[in-house]
Length: 273
Image (cartoon, rainbow, N blue to C red; front, side, top):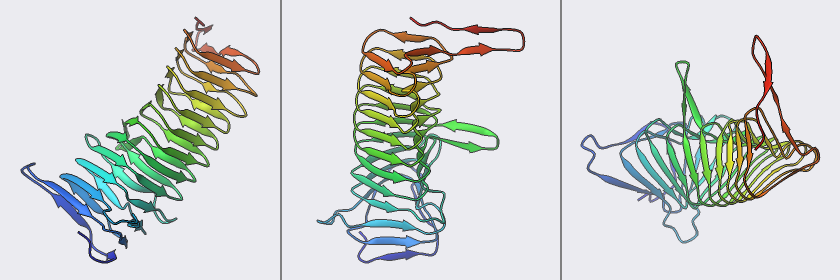
């Protein structure tokens, strides 16, 4: 339990070589600042047990937390600064659970290459709120996100890369709601200033996808089983792959567009079902 505000000038690491321990780090209403990172190599819960939930992390030079194993963050605020690229970095094979977590960051809130469950989050960003992949030695490792509730807002892109299953909540991007992400939307709203879901492919079972100035969904193979896809100033759906509309509603100023595909020899169109 943290008993007063702390300024981290040396890296800290939670370790459990035998994989037998569960560690709880209670910031207890205090502020953790500094220029070094907390590294998790165990089963870690970071929580703020204070009545007012006023505890926060304010990293200054590098990530506040790097997660290699299992981490749950509950009722904690993260405030990013212009000096860091992302607030939390979760590596391949890691698991991360966010409960009542708040992010106020000028760049990337989370860079995730593992498995992430969002039970409730409030996040604002000026670039990409969640970068759902990580590049190491010319290899891209994609993450997986299961979003149950929360609000994610960015002036550029809400979530980029990897896979997203969304059950509720809001993802809003000034340019794209999601970009390069395979999306399964069961409920909730994905809202893009230009395009709601941009590339990656998608399955819409419910909820709403909105692309305000261009397309509701653009790119990939698209399946709409329910919900509402809307491109009020462009296409409801425009895609290079097959487009399947089995239910729900797809609406756009220019309807549905199947984009032409070309290789070195010839061009073709895929199908609308």
